[in-house]
Image 1: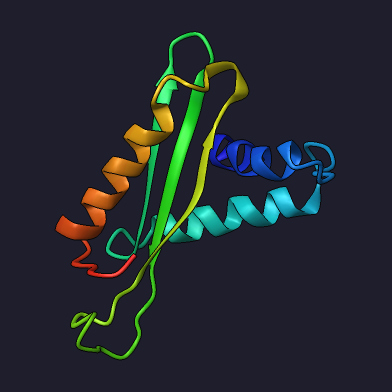
Image 2 (image 1 turned 180 degrees about the vertical axis):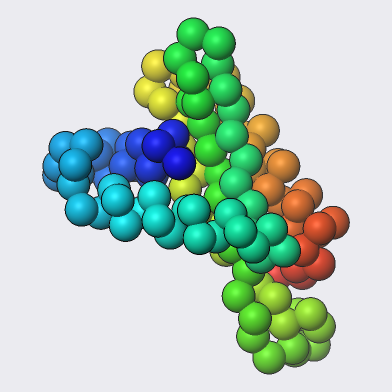
Length: 116
């Protein structure tokens, strides 16, 4: 969980938002959220890239929420992509693309999601 929480904080920090320290309340809440979602593999997935020298350096997260089926989305499960992030020390190497490609494949094959 620490890697997902750390990577989740990178984008707001890069945009100049204060993310506070390692003990910021949002970090504990985020860790609980990820922990809870990981227990539901039919509606949640997280794909990560690990680097031997830096640990987890990239992520892409996806969730599915049940909605009423429609002609465009017969399963009623829209997918939502979030937490696409790469450690600044390992950017421009395609890591986020690999995570996102894996997530989009999961939506199609595993989650039966037609709309992301």
